[in-house]
Image 1: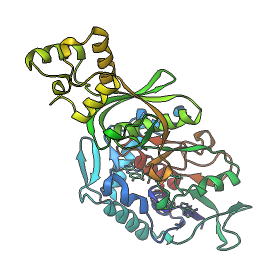
Image 2: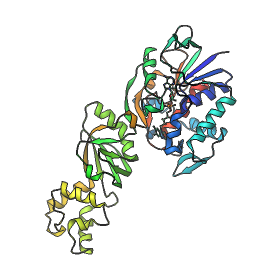
Image 3: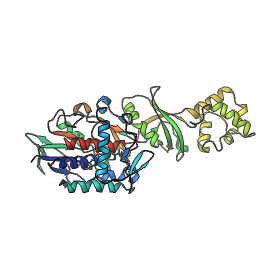
Length: 398
Ligand SMILES: Cc1cc2nc3c(=O)[nH]c(=O)nc-3n(C[C@H](O)[C@H](O)[C@H](O)COP(=O)(O)OP(=O)(O)OC[C@H]3O[C@@H](n4cnc5c(N)ncnc54)[C@H](O)[C@@H]3O)c2cc1C
């Protein structure tokens, strides 16, 4: 019987193991931690957001989107839904985001572990794969464990959140077997601003925020921003971070442009009317009940306006400048936070080096990849796990 070895017992590796074992093959899963699925446990704030109703190509990033298009298909979508049904995960769906009804990420990990066991997958924990050589067959850790396999699936994850086990060594192993690696960069991560915005630390507000690269707007997100002592966080920022990291790495100028009052279409006429309605207030007071007061004071200071000044005494150019700073509050980006803070990575094994139907390497026969090690990263909302499940299914099945 053919021996299949899967390296990495995360989301992708566990699903790959289940599918390979269902095909009647002898499957061994090697995991460096003392248990599988450590990262699954911290997903979705411990609740595991494992899928999203709005499963669409536009939520994914890759250097090769045209290949990704062949993976994000209706047929594959059905397969993912059916899989979770078959392994007994009852979904709790909130605004299109899927969580297990138990509200516990651990229940997803346990369902996967249980399926592995029932299908005869041999799980070997505490095995850190550092070297793979290919002769007729693959030999894993030749000098120590000397594990021989007919086919292998590398599912070692990326460098994101490396305390969970995925330290990026998988890239080196893939490279040693002849693959290229698109430089991995942190994604779904906080942004560090050039400007000191410490006074805003702790403020959360609903905004629309755009990523500007060399004066061009690349992407706009709507949602809650969280200002921190180093910069900005929040889902809307995370969803811009992958493009931002890639741009910074290419020495491009990156900035976020924030509309602090996105529901107001014309700030100046809104303020004219407001000033008529709540008479006698100074500028700072005029923002009461409209904008966080620390944020309003920060913007007034940035606009060189005295907070005690009256709206009616401002010149048109002062009103326009204030409007600009409220509706297009620009913060230049110094860097992203590092891999340990990132939920995922952009970059990895290029999709041009795998078969998008089977996830087999086009460079080394009988070598497959699954999960985050590949050059695919998704937005927040279940997209990264979905890619891990799906690539695991396709690699395992084939
Ligand atoms: C805080 C946080 C929250 C997240 N929340 C969500 C969410 O709610 N929804 C979502 O879709 N995505 C979420 N993600 C992203 C998601 O967890 C990952 O995209 C997904 O887990 C990737 O799966 P993977 O199997 O490719 O890699 P991993 O889950 O990283 O698994 C790789 C496994 O391989 C093992 N390994 C690595 N190298 C070796 C080696 N050399 N030898 C042996 N074993 C090795 C590792 O220990 C690990 O167990 C979150 C990520 C983080 C960090």
